[in-house]
Image (tube, rainbow, N blue to C red; front, side, top):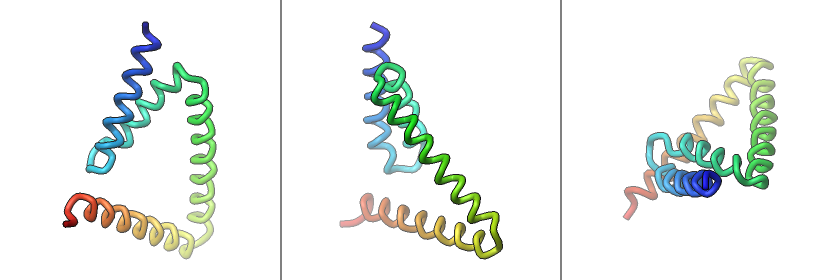
Length: 99
């Protein structure tokens, strides 16, 4: 019974987070909690989260390496971050307010 409850709750949290992820707030944070609930009961989901964690750690190390090289590395990381945030902001604006 507990497994069914965890799977159902996890799927529900992920579904609600997917809709809420487009809006400001804790959408992606709650999605991670939902995935963790699913992964606790479903081995392929657990393996997927493990692989995702390794990829994120590798990416974060890559960004840290670029950041630490020089002022140009810092400028590059900041510029790319601003461009990504501007693109995401425009995408959310276009989805919510475009006619």
